[in-house]
Image (cartoon, rainbow, N blue to C red):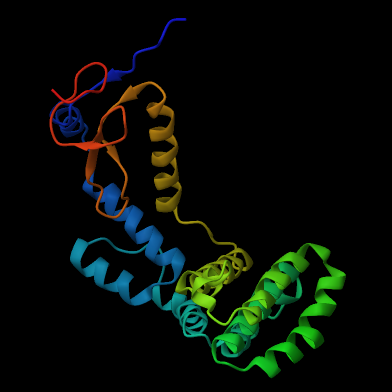
Length: 243
């Protein structure tokens, strides 16, 4: 049986190839501004506009309401967020049962986070269980949320992610997207899609060659690994062994 040998490329050569690819700085700035505007980060968008000299595509004052709603969710104040959304457009929640369920789920999570266990049980029984009956697809998420009450040490439980700030961020982003759709605006920023494309492209390339890859999307450092998966600093030969 023949063994296919992966082609290898050194970090130095990879960096030389990357340096030949010209990227327009204004295009990068537009990607960042697109993300800040769509996600509702008004203050950051204003500051970035001053630093980059790039004018935003919309009036930044128009995203003030979305910024306040996002802040309420990320602060754990779901009731205020719901009130603000209804002020913007009451049909957003009336016509989106999944979104409304996720907001109620976040309310339940915040009650449990604050130690309001009796109130959480009552809220789940009176408000969320009936919605689970109407929409069986929500039951699994409800059961997972209620599991927070079953663990003394929630941080070590299999549902600890529900108390992570990322859960608030997820709910806030879903609500933000729904508001944008109601206003006939673009709801998905381009930057996350490009990062997903990068990850997919690297996965495809992994099957054919050994090369310096980006493993941390925040630092974007190039990492070279040998055929056993160990990081190396030097150039690598055609079979992935350090020279």
